Image (cartoon, rainbow, N blue to C red; front, side, top):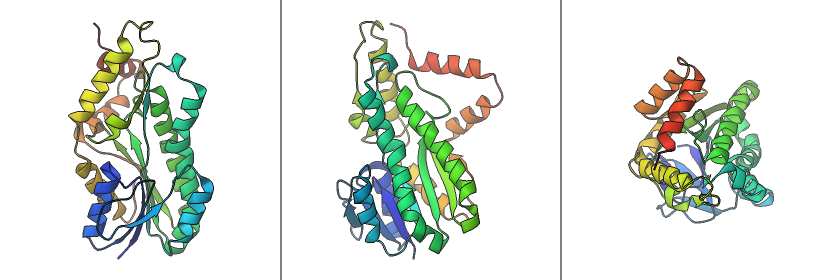
Length: 259
């Protein structure tokens, strides 16, 4: 039996991941503001953007074998009309909070020679128009994850990152959408967001991502990054073959539909 800590396990990918770990007989600690409604899940109410709450939460966990940094949200809107406060809040949860969580968990992860898994997005290698700050926050997550993998090797702690594509979860409804300046962009912001939401609602079920996360956690040596979904794996390979100018043009065509 392993002790697993998951942030943002009250719904979506975190919930499905917790469910699989519990079904396999593990002890699962769920850190989130809302409780995870799974029998046998150990809920610790915690706003992970609050450092003291994170420190207090980890005092309640005796041992950690696997840490899954899953919590996150997205904002959308034109870069030039996004307020600095909104940008900072995006990075606060998607990046800095998970660094805080990881730092708090590390003493116990070093003791168990445990594993850390970050959750990223295809938006990291393929920045999406009108989601520039979400894309940037996930690219930063991948960078920190890869750096940590080397830093923690001497302690026997392994680190990996799961890069996922469009997934059908409450993430879509919870996205903070701003259409400020849509008149300046001739309605392009609204059309672009509509494409994002359509793709997400036609995307993979969260259970598919959860299975990949659990499978990854069982590997003796985890790769630095895995991409879930064949089409996204293909895109990542394509990015390394064709000039990036072409890839970026394709992204623009996908997410910036004409009237």
